[in-house]
Image (cartoon, rainbow, N blue to C red; front, side):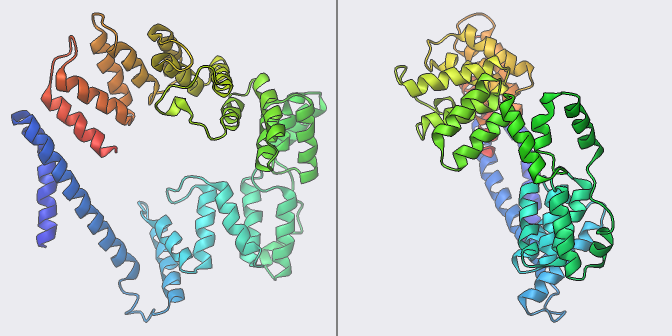
Length: 419
């Protein structure tokens, strides 16, 4: 209980930090930081104890001495928690049980990845991979999961794969699979509409059809080739990635350049990475690139193209180029033109921070206040550099913005929290 009371005392102290700030700003920063470190440490210890208690307590009393027994008990506990309205920690329990050898937990965790259940972020590729591993071990339940996913998400599992897995499950005696084989595996209404448009001469649907999971693999390949022949930027970008992964760098460059020419902003970034081939990407770090280096000239051209296509990342990168002087002379007005467009598109992490810099380093009336305004927007979005920028301004003051030790300490504390 002593540790528990200490924890609450420190939480109370943490909540009362604002009063300390008002009396002694410098001391408050040190006290706040020390308290935060201690509180975080105690929270971690409590979380570890709770997890250990929840997972293992009572298992020995139930006679569960083997890893397999514990894994299944954890799986059952996860299912119980999953039925609660405010279930927490279900995904962690399933993942832990799966690591200990529970196949049931592994499949449920994989299903949760596909359906984004238990608070997990959707990761269809990872989920299907886990299910495939057990299907390859001839587990009928895993095979039949492909059938279920096909029903809900035909774009992820096509009819050919669903039918194949259903036959495999049925051969292993799975009753639901046997009944399902009596019905055809039909395509979705959306795909039928796309095929109708294609039949009417709409070539723009070729690439979309090529990624529809409820078409056969042969049909999907046919539409992918048609999309390439039709100069579809998305198909060219995809082909560039395929060639790059296969080791054909030159072929990848050709298709990615075609995609760039046909309006793919994504292709701009991928092609730039291939061209740099390990060289620093100056738009993400420090230093100034050599303007005479043809690789950096091409990178600048591609970032400019992405900006012209209205991609917020390209706009931010071009703004950064004019703020820092990458491949161009510094020009804050030009930088703000690009950055404001990115800001208008909803970019709140990088664009406002860079806009703030253009005002911070401009000696004109009202610009310091504008710098603070945009730094705060970026800091609220979680940008640590913006927090440090505010800390610097409030530590020494900047033109019309007065020195404020309390605010400087606050933003130092906030930046440490985001390290």
